[in-house]
Structure formats: C-alpha cells, structure tokens
Image (cartoon, rainbow over all chains, first blue to last red; front, side, top):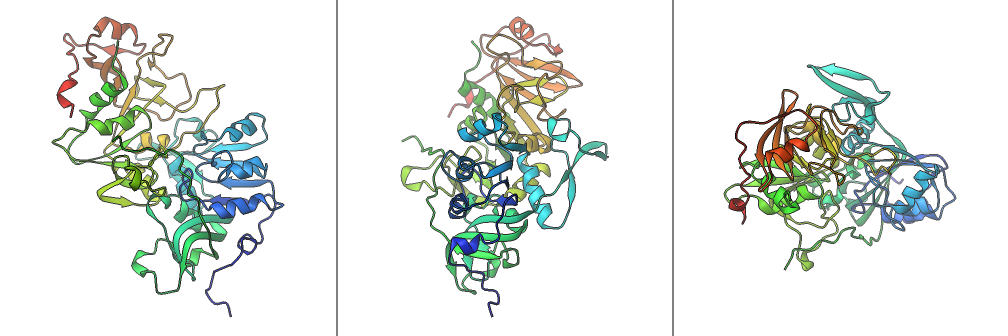
Length: 233
Length: 223
C-alpha cells in the first residue's frame, strides 16, 4: 500500500509519463520559485513539442531558457519574456509560437482551470490586441473579455516545505504562480527544499493541500538572482 | 529642460495619500518610493505577491525568495504579507489598490494608454500592466511629453496598440501635470522654467489651459 505517500526519489519517476506535445504548466516568477531540477531534467529527456505555460521563460542557460536552448518548447504562454535572448531569436525566426497573456489573466486562467471553471470575464485587455477574436460582454455598463482557462497534462511547481502527503508551504515571493499551477495539472509534481513527516506541518499554515499534488521530490536549488539590488550604504 | 527622472518621481509622490495601497511600475515609478512624504504612511504592492514592499536589502539580508515585480531583491516592511499571483491580481482587478503609477509610450485625451507594444519591434510582453490599468481606482502615468524627435506623446488618439481604454486620469510629464476628463487634457501645473507655450506646442491632444498655470513645487517634499 502506497496510501498517500507522494514522495518519489528520482527525477525519472517525478517526470514519468511526460511525452511529446504535452502542455506543461510551470510555477515561478522570473527565476524566483521555479522548479529548477525538474526543468533541468526535461532537457535531458527525449521530449519535444511542449507547450509551456509560465509567467516568464527563464534566462539564457537557466530555468525554461534551458528548454528553449534544446528547442523542446513549441509554444510559450507567458506575460513577459524580456529577459531571454534565445527566446527573441526563436520567436523572430518563427520557430517558437508565443501567446502573450496579461499576468493577472494568466494567474486566473490557471486558477479557473484547476477549479473546473472553463472561462471567465475580465476587464483586463478590453480594447487591446489581447481581446481580438474573443467574446466581449457588458456587465453594469462596463465591457469585459471572455478568457478561457488553462489546464495541463503536467504542472511543475516549487515549494519550500512539503510533507510526504504532498501538503505544500511556499516561502515569501517564491509562492507567486505555484499554488495555481499546482491545481491545474493532471499530474502535479512539486520539487521542494525539505520533506517532513505528516503532522510536522501546521495544518493552519498549508498553502496547497496535498489533494492537488501527485508527486513530491526533494531538490537542491541554486536560487539564482536576476537583479541583485542593494541598499546604498 | 523639463523634469529629471527623480523630479518626476517627486511630483508623483505628491499625489500619495495617507493610508494608500499603491502599486509602482518599473522604471521611474519605482523611484516614487524614495519620496513618500514623511507625514503619511503608504503600503507598496508588488504584483508578484508582496504587500508591504520595503527598501533594497543590505548585503547580508539578500534573499532570493524575496523580489519585486522588476525581479530586484527587496525587503518586506513590518506588517507585510505574501500571497499568490491570483490573490495579488484579485487585489488589483477587484479595485482594492488605491493608486497605480506606470510609464507609457502614449496617452490620449480619452484616457487610453499604450505602453507595451511597438509594431515591428520585438514585443516583450505586457506583464501586469493591462491588469493594473483595468483595475486600479486611480492611475497616474509618468512619461516624457514628447519623443526624442519632438513628436507629442500626449495625443487625441493613441496610435500604438493599447494597454487599456479610458482608464488614465492623471499625467505627470517632464513638462506638465495634467488631468484627463470630459475627453480633454486639463493643464494644472508646468514644470519649473517651462512655458505654457511649449506645453501647448508639444501637446497634440485637446488641452484646456486656464488663465494662470502655476509652476510645480518640488523642493518642499524632499526628505
């Protein structure tokens, strides 16, 4: 009996079932709170044609930038991709398909997807290129755009602590998209800094209940900083 | 010479009110945090999931798990909270953020803003800007009045793809402080040393100019 023990001991097990052309939702904001080891592991797998849904696309040589390097990503759904030179190159040559999505809409698409809500109306993007071809509806005299939710075959998230049952706690702004991403994957894999026994995490403090999480793996994290800014002395 | 970057931030800071929750965009808007008047308290919201953003950290306090929306390392103030991106944008879209300050390429007399896309140039993405302009109760745009060729960025109608429609109420440019209502720009203040004639000549949109246009006061709010 495995019961509710979600812990896996290898990245092979963690990513078992990931195949060509799947949609993978990836948590993180910039390089903060990204599942570093899971992404790096995909680069070594014979998997391509992925649609990646993530706020950003990493940087050259780190995070999702690795999978751009290896040309395993076919389509990127993101809100901001300015930090990645390879991205620019592949986008301009038409190798990479890009769906730019407002950041709040992206978060809500994941949240709604995970909650079984197929679409929602939002004022964001009305009258802009984002709304082109989408249904517009008026509520109380204000115009709203119909946005469809997102789910993925896989969701890869990064948490601070997990218990073996997959309950997750995030740390500071490394939370970002991870809780929504966790709900939106058919298979959700959490790469975490520390795994503890059930009962060691305060149930009051759980951010993501274990029901959303299928696999937990303990990772090691570089936590690269994108913009080191210090107080002037 | 119009306002410098730090002076733009100083002027914007005069619009802050005690008890405001404020989201500051990347670039000049970020500098506004340096000029919050001493006699008021504001809480800064960073859309990656932080309410109560503090100053940049000292070297020993750098934490890779604590960044702002510009991906810079920051600190959290006493009373701060962390939350998910969905919660963050619920604050923004739900109208709970009192004031948003952001930059723009163009703004027009109907309050529309273009700030994220120049056709033919590489598009990096809108980030949270579309959500912020659609949701905040009050929005200040800070920008240069004209581009490097001297062409007005204060227009009858934006020419670039929009970020939001009919949402901007206040503009602090390097030349003037203006408000937008009834489909027109209204001139309230001019930058030190800048003539009303220059502002008129660099404003393509309809501009209502009162008989007397006072000069901005900048020095008094310096810390």
